[in-house]
Image (cartoon, rainbow, N blue to C red; front, side, top):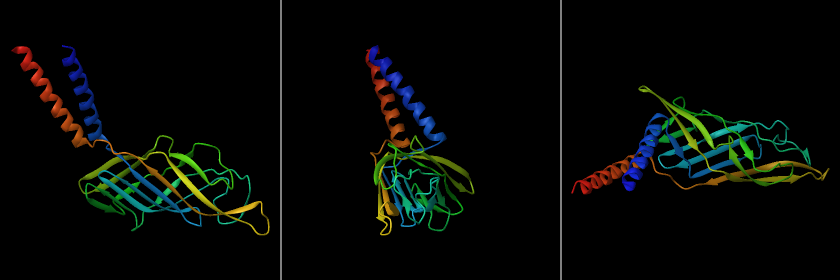
Length: 211
């Protein structure tokens, strides 16, 4: 009887997960990269995971002004504002082997949240996206709008600096890279497979109890 209760609880949990996956799919990103160009507020990004691929260009802002293309004093706080994807022809979202681009594909803004306080010319830290790793997106088609989220793992960014010849205490950003890697999780089809398997186990247990 104890085994039967366990199977019923597990079955209920997995069915609930499958129902949530059908409402707003959450894709686990297993490889994320953001390239910071020398003009630091310009970026290129690449998010890859099971069943999804997102690439494009964009920009971000920094309220303290450290990312602008000129020398800034040492000790200037390094803050990250919004990262905004530019919905141009270079921007694509591929889901289930089908590629969507402007104006069908939309990816929301995000920000980086460093794990420690950073200031110029600090060069490396770990960071998360939007505090919880989630970025919203959507695909607009003739049949309606598909809303989804991507889950980006925490990663590490490495920034490069050039020291001023005239004032050694001033620095200018010289590009950088953010990288994050994660492990894949079961897709909705895998969850359905597990539910089917548990249903078979449940049926076997009932059969044994009757005989």
